[in-house]
Length: 376
Image 1 (spheres, one colour):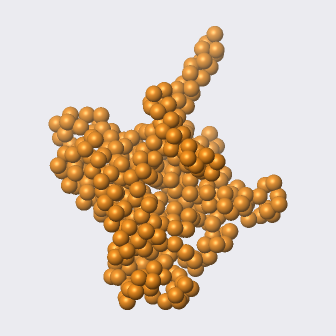
Image 2 (tube, one colour):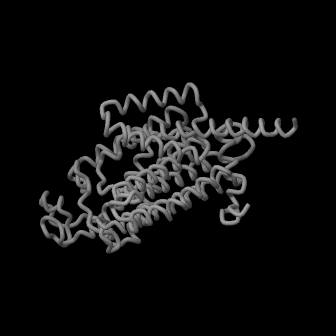
Image 3 (spheres, one colour):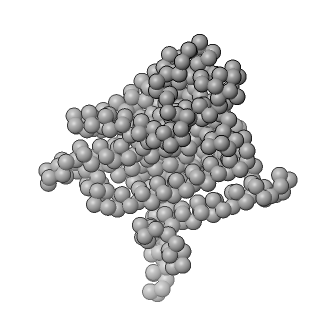
């Protein structure tokens, strides 16, 4: 009861969401303390590498929440959400590159090193404004949002659904990947954007900055969860779920289903862009590989394993699969894809509702036994 007083009202009936907020709140407190206050030799010390890794996991979790909104609640299986993630990452990467200035290898105060190397004479017009953090933050949300709006308006207006829509989203991210690989696009080509120095005047190499990025990521994940929970519990969310379950019937009773799907798709893309922007300063690089369709497919597997249609399930799946990827690629790099595939098959066959669905079933059984015991 005491705990609920400090949580948003939207979580009153969401026990899993309450636990998620508690865990993230504890992480926000403990991670800085363990990293900054305990010496490296202490058993309670948390290395900066681990802090960065945890921050990376949380950005992937935010991306999973974005996908779950459109797949789990709107029934739109997007195989191209990696594109929105990468676009948000590139927008933040462009800001970070503009902050390097004369500290680059070639010492050019205006042009990034890769432009000097390629003999560019002036900064392209689409790089203007990215020396300002506010402008860059707006672009992080605006670019993926506008792309999602245009793509969604054309697709949903034409009533493209099911596997056909999934294939088109995959083609979108693949086309963007090929475009960003080209040096003449002005985004660093194959190498992408890297060698970042600082953000808002704070060095990215400092432990305090890494901790701050982790805290900001955790807070934004909490905010995104609350916003998503509020949205799916609202009238708008109930209509979207009705569209997922029976679109023709929902259209027949008077709802303009295309508009509902479009705005859910746009919101999801904006969240994905924010996730990409948080990912880049923590990882230290953004390149066209982030557009790879394989990344979007991995994201779908994460949400399926965690349990689609349950926002906290997407977070669970993203964190667990990300950790498994870190472990397997370090110990058995050639076995990672086989392990991921096997895990997906097992979940599909035996856990169709994912780990979140399994947890709910176990909780129901436990409550049933308690009720039976008290009645007896």
